[in-house]
Image (cartoon, rainbow, N blue to C red; front, top):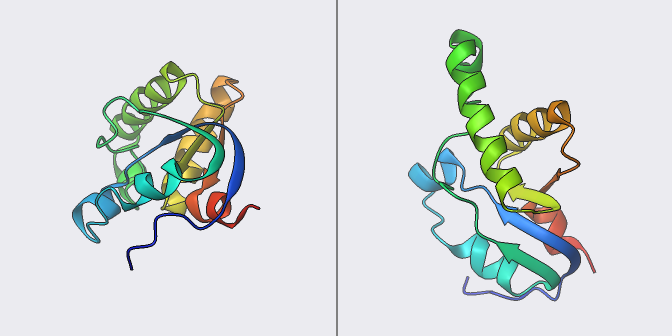
Length: 121
């Protein structure tokens, strides 16, 4: 649609997790990042290895719990390294996975869906 600024206001340091689905299926590219860069009050910080999976992957986490857990640990460490207050994404299952991992680690980093940020005024 070409929209890059929806007039949103969201205060905090935010890092963006590029989900497997958005990278490989819907191929949204950098559209979420362009939108985030235009949110007033938001400081966008780069997530190291943003293209790496969080380890959820539908039934993957159930069929491969050890691998899933290791992937989640890597993702949580990457999020923590940014110093972000929030981690955002466009996939609810990734946010549940990452949010659960961050909560268990006691980091204080919260997850928030991209739509919630863009809807904030």
